[in-house]
Length: 127
Image (cartoon, rainbow, N blue to C red; front, side):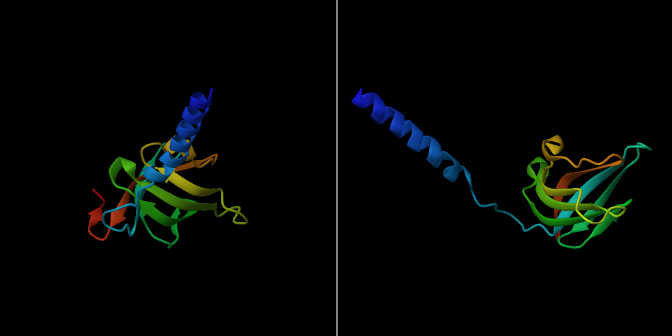
């Protein structure tokens, strides 16, 4: 019984420490912004556009601010704040979007969709 309790305690301690080991600092070039894609659901048209960190960029009637972008390629994630200019009281989206899983944390807007394609560096798209 005592050995089983020790085994459970050891497994619990290992499970609690695993997230700490998985949190590695992001390496590579610092992102200066993000490459985003917008979709107008009514017309079906998409547009790719760049957003510089902490500078609002407009897509249709949305104002988008990229606060951070980390990772490269499909691993890119950006922290976005999106406001509908018709209702500017509160943002319609604040949070992280992942390039690999845009539906995981998606903008919920009746007309527009926005997702992250990649992070931008001063030399172009992060590899």
